[in-house]
Length: 193
Image (cartoon, rainbow, N blue to C red; front, side, top):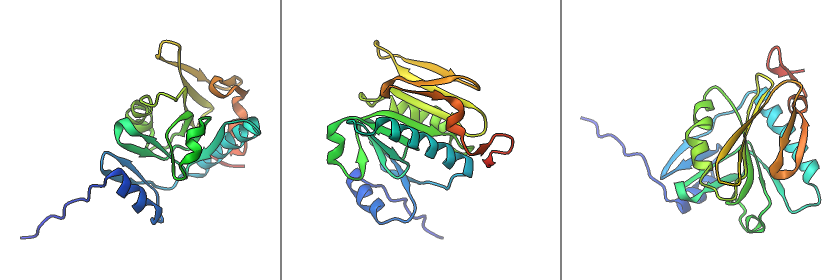
C-alpha cells in the first residue's frame, strides 16, 4: 500500500521566500500555490501594449506601472496574484520589492485556461483591495475590453468598450482608441502581424 504525499501548505512568508528561487511563477491562495503557464503571442502583445501606453502616460508622476512579474497581495484573502498589468500610485508600495498592496488599477488579459477565474473569484478577491479603483479585463482575440470601475458608493460598474470606441481609464486619467491596445495583433488569426 502506498502512502499519499501531503501537498505542502505555505505561510505567506514561506511562499514569498520560496517563490524568489523558482524558475516558474506561482500564484498563492490561502496556503496553496498554483503554477502559472505561458501565454500566447496575442496575450503578451496586448499586455505589453497596455503597459507601454500607461508607462508613457504616467511618466514623471507618482504612479508606477508593473507587468506580470510583480505580485499583487490581497491580504484579506491571504493571496498573491500576478496581474498582467498593475498600476500603483501609493507611496507605501515603493517599500516592498516583490509585491504591491495598494494598486489603483489592475488589468488581466484573458486566456482560455484562466478566463473564468479572472472574471469570477479573482475579481472577487481584487475587490477586497480598498485602493483598487478599476479592474480591466481584455480579450486578446476580439476587440473587447471591459472596465469595472468602483463608483462613489463602492459599487462596481461595468464600462464595456468595443471596436471604434475610446477606452477611458478614469483611475489614471488615460484614454485611447481600443485599437491601440491591439497594435501588432492580427485580429483574424490572433497572431502578431
